Length: 166
Image (cartoon, rainbow, N blue to C red):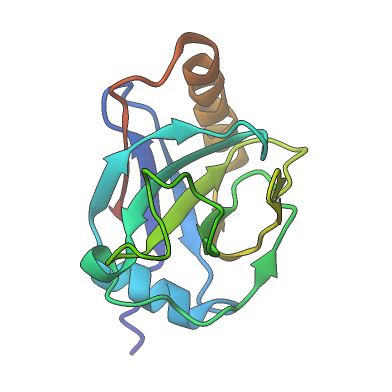
């Protein structure tokens, strides 16, 4: 019998909005395993400037996940409902967040909630692993409204979480 977790829930701790996503063991088994082993986790939430319709949290790789997964089901143009593990090469993050001399690496756990996204920023292109996708389009659309509200009114103090879901 397969006991793999099938779903995760991503949400905003203060806002109360959340969305259920299907883990994609078929395309990103190593990423799903590393993420599931770390559940639940959360961090300060941010809204993208360059990628467009993205909320994310930055987490220390070793402390939360143990290690990075291999690159699998890589994407540079995420679709609505894609949850991604985005690798950060040297120089991509500001020095006060992470530098090559830091004793820890940072990963971007990002949810894309609408169309028109890309992972091409001022430092060039970047890719990440898609490891979960939207399960219910109406629930994603409702969550997207909450994400837009955060974009318009600010995300100060908001926390993004990822946890197991039924």
